Length: 354
Image (tube, rainbow, N blue to C red):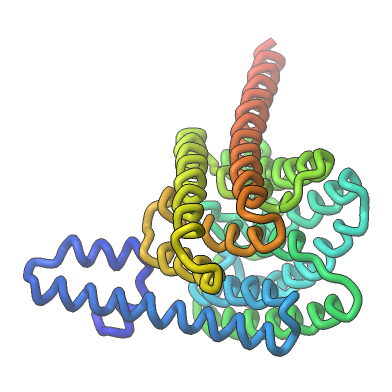
């Protein structure tokens, strides 16, 4: 494996190489590559988002984050169908992420929920056909970030331009990287494979319904940063209940630990460098291969931004409440939904038997 190829590995892959190292020299080499990868990734991410902020305004820096996520994921990940159709779907996804979150914010929480359900249905049914590729962590997360950091007027006009540029970049990189791959399935196959009795389709339906409902409830309760609850719910919903229980536990523990660590840093560090706590969290995520540690360090960036608006106590309270509510509601929703589907299947079997 070349130096460049090793740089392309994810955290788990890099750490696996470290575990398999047989000599000190070999281990030192893999550590060096790993550190270089973290440094290069952080520098690139910072530069990319900064450029978007300069071009489209600081209030649209989140557009740079969403576009960066899509670029980094879809240069390797695919949608499981013909490359040309996948590229057109990606363009459609960008249109949805640009328009629907903004419109949903103009409506009442209930009407906004209905629009969010429709939008997420397209993103998840056609973009997240393989749950184990975790495309939902890019598409649904991007949607929720744009929903939570909505803008109006001139800023929204600039957001339209920024998202159009992001769509062009993502589609270009995606098509270039996947054009030589052969796929046996197409868009029609995705539609035909929709099966309410399958684990995949039930998982998709839970994502489509639960995340917007969580957002709606949080907004009806006048909770600021409702997107945090939605992101927590999205992250916890997995096809298998055992995995969901694991995610819920790790999300709650990770966020509480992250809040404690952030609070300690907040009091120890001078106020002039509070903004860099978020960067420290990003570095921590880069070193983390396990979900619990990722949840911990992701808390830093979110709190660093929220503390400027709500103060430390308000930001910490919101973070804990929103995340606990999001994952617990998602778990309860999926348990009830799966139970209902199992009872429905049993009744159908009984009817056929009679």
